[in-house]
Amino acid sequence: MKDLFDIKGKVIAVTGATGVLAGAAARYLASRGARVAFLGRSEGKLAEAEKFCGDNGYEGMSVKADVLDRASLEAARGKILEKWGGIDCIVNGAGGNLPGAVIAPEKSFFDLDFGAWERVFSLNAEGTLLPIAVFGEVFKDTKRGSIVNFSSMTAQQAVTRVLGYSNAKAAVDNLTKWLAVEFAKKIGEGVRVNAVAPGFFISEQNRSLLLEADGTLSARGRDIVRATPFGRFGKPEEVFGAIHYLCSDASAFVTGIVLPIDGGFSCFSGV
Ligand SMILES: NC(=O)c1ccc[n+]([C@@H]2O[C@H](COP(=O)([O-])OP(=O)(O)OC[C@H]3O[C@@H](n4cnc5c(N)ncnc54)[C@H](O)[C@@H]3O)[C@@H](O)[C@H]2O)c1
Image (cartoon, rainbow, N blue to C red; front, side, top):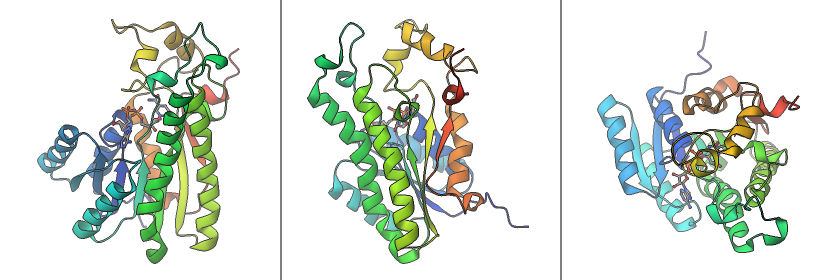
């Protein structure tokens, strides 16, 4: 019988591949035989990813690209097509919160920094839309492709203080559903669009919110762990399976979903 989870040889473009979750997922996908394009802005981290692939005999290439810069994405697409001749999947891992966009505990909505709101909205919403517009063009001809966006628990429920980030991730959910329908109807069932919605994982963008300088939980970190039935943060490797599934033919009839990876956060009443 066919291995539905076989992703050997699939070309997967991963944005934010210099970050914690997408970086780890990109390495995992390469370890499963996918040809992975690591996209990011940090040349040092990109070089590390390419070395990791080379050292392990995996197929990986690193490409410098900013998800808010169409020209840099088009140049990246050119390099991927030149090397591997196609693109099968897009994993949109670039994103996250920005310090100025978090409302301080003693402040309120009326103190919102609108400039920071716009920047965080743009990074997560536009930074997901643009790579799809650029890399996804390939799918118009091949009529095959899988897109995996990164949503968040903040999209569906109100998580205090992070308004811009929450608004942006809600836009990512909507974009996921909208494009799932658009591509199914305009291109065909071979092109699917889904999202993963991680619960809470320690990464570059939220470390200072969730942990104190000495590594112990902050008050907010404690609240989140209390609201998570598993009683802990997620580990990066716990996002691998969902992304693998959504990239593979195992999810051939699945489009427009947002899959929580959250230790039960989204189903818990808090009591
Ligand atoms: N960590 C969590 O708890 C959590 C929860 C839910 C969703 N997410 C989402 O998961 C995704 C990965 O985040 P992470 O937690 O690994 O954070 P991270 O900060 O480690 O990774 C995000 C990466 O995106 C990159 N990036 C930022 N702006 C960019 C730009 N303009 N162009 C290209 N790259 C850019 C950053 O440099 C970084 O490498 C994000 O979309 C984030 O919002 C994270």
